[in-house]
Length: 480
Image (cartoon, rainbow, N blue to C red):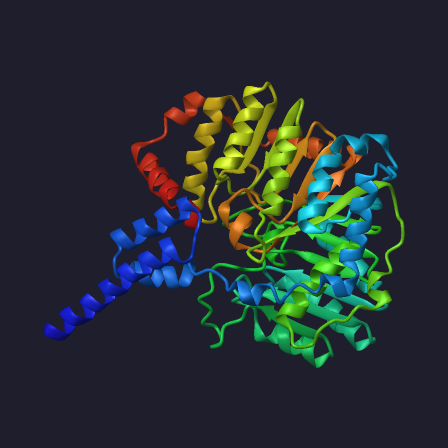
């Protein structure tokens, strides 16, 4: 008993020491600090290990060695565009772009996100259509293929893509595949073996020192990018797996949003891939013109904006808030998780109380129960303010889209939650184009036909058990 008491006393001491480190050393957000202190208080020993897995911050010293943008010519181009805007000398292809100059100026300043105005954008809301188009483009590649996905599965779709990549690698095309080690933790070794034997390069983002024992739950690369020959890029919510084709019994039809882009915006998607690849791989990609071979292809304005724990700014969240506060008529928002922090909740409340129609759509089923119950909790706040909330019934809603007034939109990988804003690496395309925005509006309105509206009366009928789960999940939402 003496040894057990000493051990418990030691663990308790570590628990208290950890609590002090959270408060005084790590300088977390106040809400996250209180959430972790509650975990340590109510789960005094196990909470210590939970924190080691979920709560540790990423070393700033390590992060800031990643920035090689100056080598890729980004800094110089950013300064030139900033000067043009500040000197009122920036040329707009469409006059209506000037209406949102403050938004893209903000992204340019705090994210080096250059505005391009010569892009062609195709919208996908169905996985089969998206992957058919992607594979067709992969088969046409002649120089290089760069893929980055949070989840890659070696199932029917995964094998189909692998077959294509193996074929192209054997033809002499440079093939690079970057996957997140936690998101793709079940990825078959056969996938890796086949690609590497064909001459492709495959690497994992933040892999563990001991294979299959990755405890780095936070700071995952949640981005989804595909760049072919530097001319075509894909960005959005679909990962690689059969469930994204709607073949999962649990989720049914998978409703997501993805973009195919050609034009100069692909250059900035390429830069994002190269930065991530050079962090994860021992075989750096150096600047070469062939990686930036994009040609003008249309007239859609696009900014590629990324965010993550490697930055002091929450760039995508700032973009969301700026979009919401710029709205004059309506904001349509689709997200699988709705756990906004106070700043985003305030923006939505201010908008709806100012007469702007706020319509939010969430899925009808959870893939992460605690996150789903927290979502239901925060939905109540917006219902009380006057927002319209829709529960998608046509399958699982995984889209991450915002549309403002049918003129401005964002599509990408970032959910409306703390994890996407602060803990994961994300990337979104901000779209300054009425035709694309209207297509997203039409998709939203079509989804309403497959949804039920959550009214205040229905919300009040929630069972006591659901309300209890919501309360606990809301308390823990800063660390979910």
